[in-house]
Image (cartoon, rainbow, N blue to C red; front, top):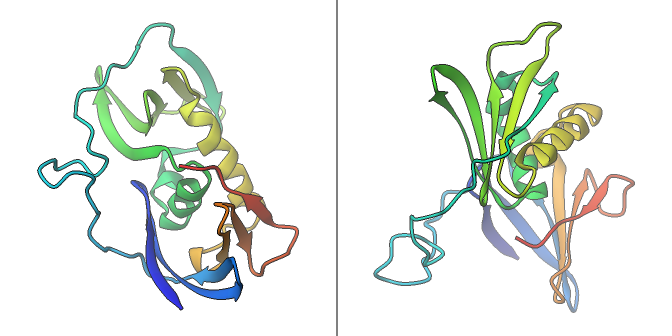
Length: 185
């Protein structure tokens, strides 16, 4: 058995994996998050990837859309867990003051998305994205999936991993119709 903290910037969870074939492990996420200490790439660098704090982000050409998603849903730890699994490059979701507006910022690599907490009307909220990737698109599609599945808690999910690096996230049991090939972080 392997008990490990499968962790990302948004959420972590302990998972208990058992060997199910010579090159395969499979198991279910536990209800509690894991909080093992991050490993660091370099002993004298506080950043776990060995990088630096400096990052250049192109703030030109912002893209504006609207969403029916309200900001409070992003506080749900079970949703954050699923977003972390489906979008491993997601780094943070937090509230900030952006030029006098209260927004929820989603960071993903060199991209940012701001979800305005004040509704536009008709229950819609403005989303402003900057950077080369669509930081909001994956979060929004994960929210749709999570809602469609009935807002499952993290312990309903499991993972199957193979020696070739394939990771499959599944809901309730392996081999169901609700299984997703996860992207490499």
